[in-house]
Image 1: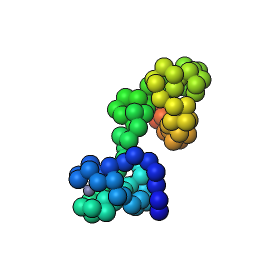
Image 2: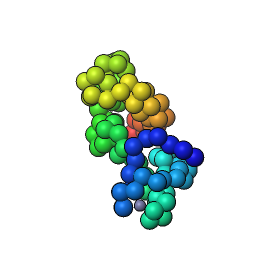
Image 3: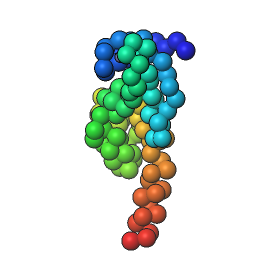
Length: 101
Ligand SMILES: [Zn+2]
């Protein structure tokens, strides 16, 4: 599969990579053709850095629009959308927990 994203192997820096499916939490898994090691791209985008996801969700809960959220956090609105899509089930889990306690 040909890909055009700028990804390099964290082990050897090579960009000759193959997609290897996804991990349980939906993170894209890659294998390096050079060193044959596997790695995930959880932190490929700024949005996946620690804390950003929480900020996106927090802003969403405060009724901030996707575009506003992206502008404030300096990330693309597509990224905001995908975070919100992925985390929607988590929100319902949260409210379930609140009902239990
Ligand atoms: Zn490598």
